[in-house]
Length: 170
Ligand SMILES: CC(C)(COP(=O)(O)OP(=O)(O)OC[C@H]1O[C@@H](n2cnc3c(N)ncnc32)[C@H](O)[C@@H]1OP(=O)(O)O)[C@@H](O)C(=O)NCCC(=O)NCCS
Image (cartoon, rainbow, N blue to C red; front, top):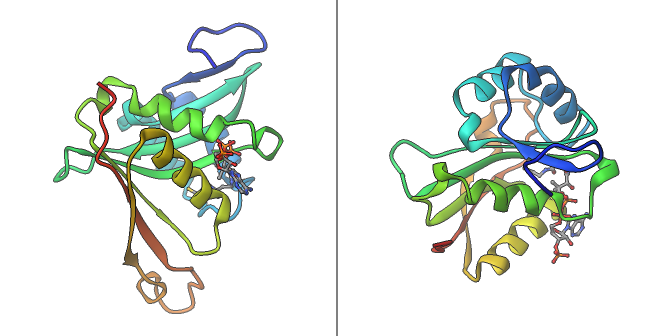
C-alpha cells in the first residue's frame, strides 16, 4: 500500500466530498453495516477527512474507514465504520487502513482505539483483536448500545464497546 498513486497500486488517502457517493455505494454493498444517508458520508468527507480514509485502486474505492476523535476524549480514536469490498477481503486491507489512520498526525495523541461491534460480526471482532495484538496491547469489552436503544421494531443487535490500549506508536 502506498500514498503515491500509480495505475494498479492501492492508494490510501483522506476522502474528499467527490468520494461521498462512492463511499455510500460501498457501504451499501457491505452488510451488515448500517447504511447512513449520502449526506452523512458527505459530511464525514467534508469535516472528518483527517480521521477517515479511502482505499483506491485503479480509480475505484474498494475500502473505507470512518473515525473521529471524541471531543471529550482526546486520547481516543473512535472507529465508526470499516468496509472492504468483498473482492478485496482477507488481504490485510482492513487492518492496513486502521494502522494508516493511527499513523496520521490527527492520531498523534491517541492512546486508545474504541469501536463498537455486534455479537454476530466475527470478521469485525477478529480484525480488532488482530489490531490489539499488533499494537501489543489489551482489548476490553463493555456493554454500550443495547437493542432497546435503537427503538421499537428496529431489530438492531447490541453494539458492544471495544477499547484497545493503551498503546504508543512513537
Ligand atoms: C470486517 C472487514 C472490514 C475485514 O476486512 P479485511 O480487509 O478482510 O480484514 P483483514 O484482511 O485486514 O483481516 C484482519 C484480521 O481479521 C481476520 N479476519 C478478517 N476477516 C475474517 C473472517 N471473515 N473470519 C475470520 N477472521 C477474519 C483476519 O484473519 C486478520 O487476522 P490475522 O492477520 O490474524 O489473520 C470486512 O470483512 C468487511 O468489510 N466486512 C463487512 C463490513 C463489516 O462488517 N465491517 C466491520 C464493522 S465496522
